[in-house]
Each structure stands twice: as structure tokens, then as C-alpha cells.
Length: 370
Image 1 (tube, rainbow, N blue to C red):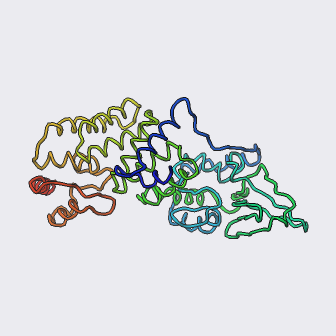
Image 2: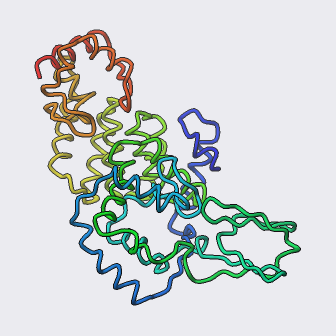
Image 3: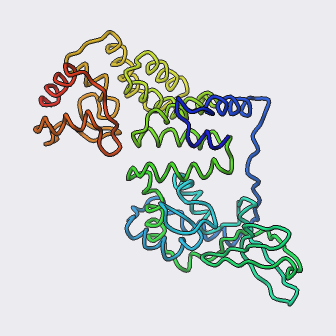
């Protein structure tokens, strides 16, 4: 089922079966299994977290944060392809509120998934080894801790115990002051903020490997695929996610943007209206998009109409920028051939935009007037 998820596209042989299975497992009568969370209350750790409450008001330096990540976190965590996958991939949690991230850093045992609890292996010769049991069978046990992996013969093992403490140790306050913590969090969020969409999508796909019914992860993959210029795949993920959780406003916003980009005005309008019904915060912006889409549904091949139908959802109604870069006043618009190439072939995260020659000429003329 997960193979279909990873390769989902309109023509994929298993896509429909996967979608059907997803809908069944997410129906009100069938609840998906949540990760098993355990935790311990430590008043001293809570005091440490409280001392760092001011971090939320600090401006972090992501370059400094990168260096801190490599020095202090990469031994056990991955982010943007760097590090080791012992604890959670930080790309999957970087968007959480600062308060939750501070708890995870300075009080790691307060709430931890059971799979990340510290495990201790006592050997028959009296030695003890601590880390994460990543694999075991009748013959051997594999223990991981940071960059070290040790394979232990089963016949050498006296017992394996799982503690109630996180594999991540306490005490990072001795290494990170509040500003360094803000820098580290800034680096953790950089994958999304700097539009490293493929890397962020890979992080959410790792979540789906472990929990294929995680609706939020499905939605995030869809959003990231859309932002990464892969609308056909994005549509599958977003439609599945919104079908399973129609109260998630963010998904309707991006699904409407996707439909709008494809020129499917009525579907875009319906998705944006559902965004408003779900209580989405960008009310004025989306109401303007709905009005624009309704106007475009009536047709029109003049430059402004083409721009509104194909470009405004990402670049703003007046070219002021949005998901895509600002166009108004952009010097590249003075080079029509360069713009033509970008529109027809795409560039970076922007997909190619299929236009007739008449529509393209009208669009170029309009863009030149911005």
C-alpha cells in the first residue's frame, strides 16, 4: 500500500486501491492507531524549560544553528539529509510551536514515543550497553547509539531492558544558551522556510512509512509537492487528505490554488469556499481569489485574464508576490524571451504553464506593463 502512496499519480496502477483503503481506515468507525507516548514528570527539568521561555521572542540565526545542529544533534537526528536516524527526523517536527520544541530539547522524557526510549542490554560477562535496539532476531541484536552500531550475538545477551527515559539525554542547557537555542530552532525550520520542498516532503514520507494513515502527513506531502512544482502528484495527496479530514482549512487553500493553476475554476472556487467554511484565517485573500476565479470562469484571453487564471494564485493579483516571487518591478520582465522560456518550461519550483501562442503573447504583454 505504501508503494502506491510514494508513487501516487493519476495513472498509477495501485493509486485507486490505496485511496480506497485509506478512506476505509479513516472512516469514523475505524480509528488509526496513534503512536504510543509515555513520559515522566521531572520538576527540575520543568524549571529548565521555564528558563528558556524567552527563546520564542528571539530572532534565530540559521547559519549558526546549522553549526550547532552538526555539533550537538546530528549524531542522533537527521535534517535535510544530514545526520543519523536514531531519534526522530527533525524535518517532521520543525514546524511545531516553539514551546513544544523547548520541552523536547530540555525535558526530552516528558513525552516520548516508546520506540525512542533508552534500552539497556546486559551481557552475560557483566558488561552493559545502552542505546536503541534497531533490529533483533534469533541470532543477534543490533544496538545503535549515535554513529556507533554494535551487533551482539544473542547467546551473549543476559537481558534487555527498556527504561522510562528518552534515548535523548538531559542537560543540553549546559551546551545551549537561549540565543543558541533560537539559532538551532531557526535552522530546524529552514527546510520549509527556504522552500527545500523535496527534502521536507521526504521527511513526511518517512512518517508515512511508519504510519500510512497519518492524515496530516499526507496533507503535508501534498502541499510540499505542489510547492515543489509537482501538481499531478500533489493533487492525489491533497484530495485524499481532504476527503479524510475536511475540517483542515490549510488543505482546501492549497487544493484550490492547485485547481486554479490548472484552470479548473469551479473546482477552485468550491475548494476555497470550503476553506472559508473551515474557518481559514486568510479570509480577505481567499474571498478575492474566489471573485477572481468566478470572473475567469467566464473566459477571456486578454493578458490580464490569462495572468489571473494562471499566475495570480502564486504571484499575487497585482504581481505583488505570494507563494511565488514578486513580479511587479521585476527586471526579468524586461526580457520577454527569458519570461517565455520560464513560462513554457518552468524553472525551479515553478511548473511549466501550458498556454496557446495567443495566450502567451497576451500574457507577455501584460507582464511587461507591471
